[in-house]
View 1 (cartoon, one colour):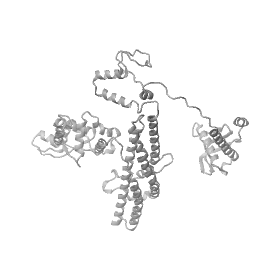
View 2 (view 1 turned 90 degrees about the vertical axis):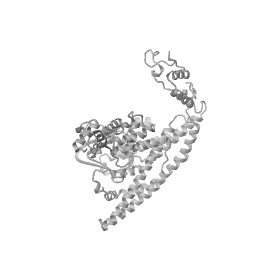
View 3 (view 1 turned 45 degrees about the vertical axis):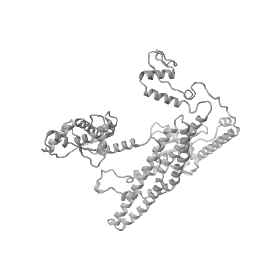
View 4 (view 1 turned 120 degrees about the horizontal axis):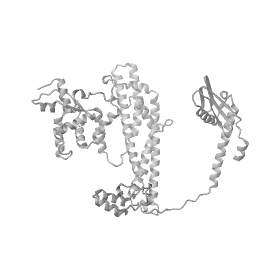
Length: 546
């Protein structure tokens, strides 16, 4: 039997446990808010997550999967026999509940299909089809990749660096060829092929950079996880020493060697970026609401540039890689120093604590209490530990529910709280002291000269060209003066308490103040700047300085 579309919608809604008006429409993914999108991860923490994972893998294993509850149930039956899902999860009614929940979370959408069936039950099980949503495919793909990832370090694909360098050079050549072909005949086959070669080069470079950036992030995340541990076994120290000294040095050297040429290529493409993006314009047959490949927007190129090139206030990822390597080597040296220093066990009691933790994990409740009492001397009747910070009777609280005490490093490594070592001597270094005093005197002399230059200029700042030091002092006092204002229409002033130089700033519509210096020109719009004071150091201050 067949049913009209409206009756099929009603039956589908009945199987899903909702009314026809509540059947979710397939709205565009971009209209979902963050809360709705985060529900796509809900099945990973559900009690039946193994069943949900098996269902989502079934839907994402093929393209355009369109399955009914009966087909999903048949597929889950094999997984149930192999023990990959709990018993009873392949039952059709249970499968319908799981599919209905996935529809509510947004991982699946209800499909439409005309069905010829011999009974109502067959119609209900066959007419309701399910399809996977776009974002759910990404979630499941990332989940499978995460479950397959090993716990160890990930190799950095540093061989992609010369490929990226060559690719950026090839983009410049392909862009010139595409522009020349377009000027000759925009609609010719040669112009279309030139644009396709340019798009191929851009897509390849951005895919290579995405893979390189992902491996670098994963490797340094693993490195930060292990080198910050307080105690490392001797074999671990040896392995990390080889890893840091040999492998990281090789990675950093490769990155630094290719960064200069890559930065030069990116600087050359920055001037023709508008033409490049125009040639890589959106495909008309896909429409405007389409997720483009990387490299088709100015933001993608800016992100690629920021990875290799420093910008004011934002260091590049290459600089961050250098700093992370230096911190990792410092952490390793600290671990080696702790392990090789005298006065304690090497590598401490970490192995003993891990063995005790394993015993406690496999023991039942009574045995665990006995192990804890034997290991730490704490029994159920009384707490043999320092008194709590709060004034209360703590003898009725079991140790597992009592307050947690921090165990110091000396207790973990030596088993006692006694202090070790002696107080360091304060070294007398007259040469360093004289050097620091000379540097301080030079800094005072430079500031005094800068303040005197400003005082001499006085009200003729627009006619004078200030030195870099004088401009720095002026900007410092100008910042303090503007911070003193209550509002944008108020005046403010700041005073150098040593040299008695005052800078006053007040708003005046239509007035423009220009201050030239060796470092550039400072322009203040709708603002009047006044400098007053002699700029000399008072006698009291000069005497105290001497």
